[in-house]
Image (cartoon, rainbow, N blue to C red; front, side, top):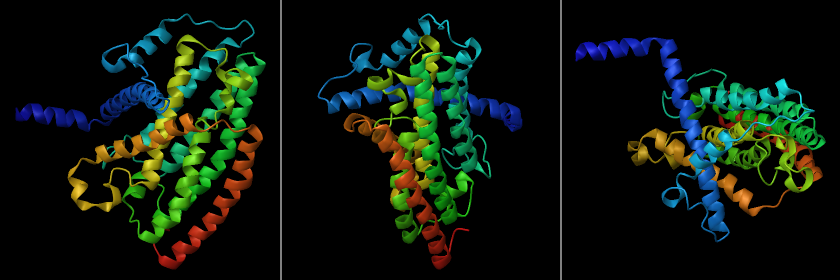
Length: 339
């Protein structure tokens, strides 16, 4: 028995195998989370609208995500005659791969991270920023004016709010003194620091709604304006990849919010008695709370006009976050801590 244990310990020490196993675990976990996030979204929204939601496939409709996936993947792939075939197919695949790649630096618990990068924050921000290329390529390659307009809208929207998100992350880095996501979670958070970062948490929550093209900032997909936006010509497996990428990004941004502002896997409010509960449970619970915020916003708020969206990003959030970076730097110098 000891020989078997030693063999598996030696095998696990072989880093390429460890990377492959972790990658498979994270990928399968994210895909399952995406599948049942759609189920949870439909259930929560139906409860808010006094309906039942999915109830037919499986007990309480629990197999509805499986049925939806089979339906989408079984459909015929139709490529428009005017489309650039190569780019038309590469765009959804690229978006999906990027949505999964960013998870490499997210720590689920102490030591539970695929790549414990010293610049983990920059890595996640850079990977999520690259998604705009897939959206623009999808809009252009479709050969549709509606799709191209949706791609341009998405590019402008994501770039506008990424500037504010970057400045918010600068505030967090100033307070914690690290770009490593694990060290950010473990950094001490005195009361003055928590009060200082609370306005940034509010702005960050609104910004990730715009970054992920979710209601009330779902202008790139505005059904009543541009009939579905950059995905209007997509169906079957390609549409499913866009769908998976969107929801994977939702979960990613919720996990980033948990890591940067809510203490990651640490017990809430620093209550030591709760430390007996595994950290992964607290991480999942906090992330689920942010995902509920996404669903609640979609069910409750009407879509913004495009000029309102741009005005909020450039004339409200950008000046506010710029000023708050200076305030944060001054507070760190005055009270100590951080960099």
